[in-house]
Structures are given as C-alpha cells and as structure tokens.
Length: 99
Image 1 (cartoon, rainbow, N blue to C red):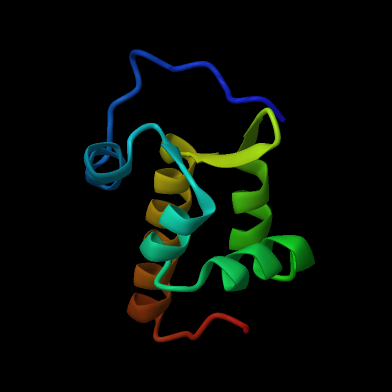
Image 2 (cartoon, rainbow, N blue to C red; image 1 turned 90 degrees about the vertical axis):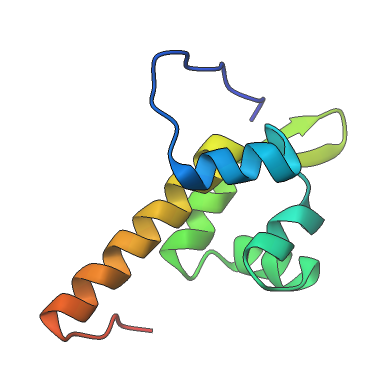
C-alpha cells in the first residue's frame, strides 16, 4: 500500500499531535515500537501474525516508500485512541477484553 493522501479538514487528536511533533507524519518500525513500548521485532511479529485486532489495524497503516516500510501517524493515532476508548469502556463495564 502506498502512503495515503492528507485529509485537511479532519481534527487532530492529542495523540496525533504528539506523534507529529516527535516523529513526523511517517513513523519507522523503530519509532512505532517506541510508541507501543515494545521492540521492533515484537511489533514486526505481531503484524505478521495478525492475531490481535490492533496488529491487523497496524498492518493496514503501513505504507511503502521504495523498499522502506513506514506507518502513517494519523492512522497509528486512530488505532491508539480507539484502543484507549475500548480499554476505558471495559473498565467502566468491569469487563476484561479477551486475550
């Protein structure tokens, strides 16, 4: 997948703003691992196995520039924000997500 077009009128979340300031519009695998508090190899394997919903979403956030793999900051921010919302919902309902 190639890098997507920039959407101008979409509001920027605080997560997206943080990623833009610290890493720019595209994150390398190393940067993504830092954000996810993991190792680059751990993130790579999670995306390759696609066992978790977030790993599938991260796979869809990939874009290629030549042979290099990057992740769009806007999509990564959406994934993180959605995951936070789900965790908040589970804690309010006193339910734990299936792992």
